[in-house]
Image 1 (cartoon, rainbow over the protein chains, first blue to last red):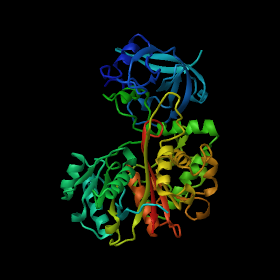
Image 2: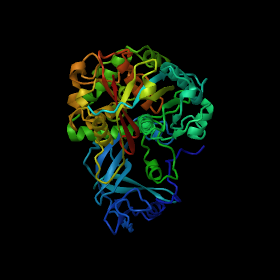
Image 3: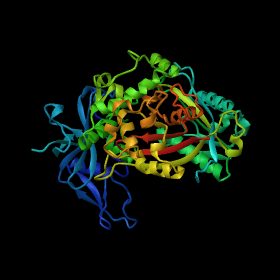
Image 4: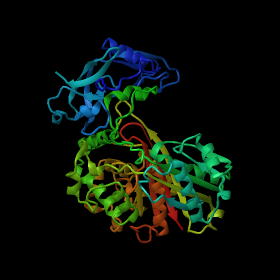
Length: 137
Length: 397
C-alpha cells in the first residue's frame, strides 16, 4: 500500500484553477478588481465589491504575518494523523489575502506565535505545488 | 409593549437516547419525535400545514419528509445552515404564521452521527472538492476543532482571555448535565470516563486536542433527534401546554475576509436584530441556550449577543456565573447540559429551542425559578471561517 498523501486540490475547479496553475511556477496569485480595488481570495468569477467586475490576477510577494493558528494534536485523517502535532493557521499576506495553510519549518510548535513574520515556501507535488509558510528568514 | 405574540412553541420532544446502536434511521427518529411533539401539543398530523427541514433525513428535503409523515403541507422550507438551521426554521415559521400562510409548523431533526462513527471533530475536512473554498482549504488539514481553536487563540491574543476562563463554560454545562438523567445516560452510553461535576482544573488538565482547546472544551458526538411544533396564536391558546412565544428573531452570515476579525461572529448582527425585534435586552434574559460546540463558541457568542463587551467574556463568565442556581447575575447557560455534556449529533440547534421551552414551561431539570425570557442562539458551519447565526428570543405568558 502506498503512503497516505496530503489531500490535493483539483486543478480543474473553475474558480481556483488559475491559482493552482500558478503554483506550478511557484507563483502565488490572487485577484484584485481594477474597477473598485477589492481583493478577492479565494478566487471567484465576479467581483464582490462592485457590479462592474474587472478582475485581474496579481502576484503576492510571499511576505506574510501569522493571524492565528492551532496546533493539531489529534486527527483521524490517514495523512494528517502521521503529521501531528502540526500547525494550521490563517496567514495574512502583505497584499491583503488571508489564506488557510500550515506553518512549517519550526523546530518546535511552541515557537509559533500570533503576529510572527512568515514567508511563503512551496511543498512540491507532481502537477502543482502547495503554498505553506515558514518563519521569515 | 409592542412585542408580537403571533407564533408560539406549543409542542416539543427530545429523543431520549444518544446511542441507538445503529438500529434506527434519522428518518425514523424524526417521525417518532414529530408524533410525540404533536401529542405534547395536543395536536395531530392533520393539523400540520407547514414543514421546515434541513434535509438530514435524506431524499428530497421537504418532499421526502412530507410523504414519510403522510402530510400535504402548503409551506415547505428546506433551509440548511448547519447547526443554526433550526433557529432559521423557527424564525421562518413565525414569519409564515404572521403572514397567514401557515397555522401549525413542524420542525424535526434526526441524526445517527455516533452510530455512524463519524469523527466530526477530528476527521479533517474531506478531500479536494469542486467547491472553490473547499478546493483552497482542504490541503491544510484543518480539523473542525482546530478551526474553533484558531478563534480561541486570537481571542486570547487580543483580549488576554485564558483557558481557565474558557473552562468555566464546560464546568457550568457539566453542572447542569449531572442534574439531567438523559444527559447522564448519554455520557454513560458514550463511555465518558469519570462522569461527575468538573472543576476548572479538570478542564485545563484534560488532554489538548487542538491548541488551545482541551478535550473537556469539546462537544460530544452523539446520536439524537428532536421535534418542535410552532402554532399561530389561536391554535396555541387551545394547546395542552402553555405557549412559549417567539418574540424576536435574527439571521446573519459571516466568512473569512481580508483583514477580518475572527473573534467576532455573525451573532453580532443577528443578536441585536433579535433583541430589537423582541424589545428586550440581554440583561433581561433568564436563560441563554447558546450553541456550545466548544467553550470558545459560547464565549464569542455571549459577547456578540451583547451580554458583555467584546473581549470581556473571559472575566464575565468567571466564578460560576452561568450556573442555573446563580440567577441574579446573568442567564443560566445550557441548562440541559449542552452539546458539551448532553447531546451533540452534529446540528444542535433544535435542542436549544427544546430546553429554552422546557425552562419557560417550568419543566427543566435545572429549573430557573420564574423564568420568563430565553435566548436560543444557533451557530452553523464553522465559527473560525464561514458560519451562519440564528438568534431566537422566547417569552412565556
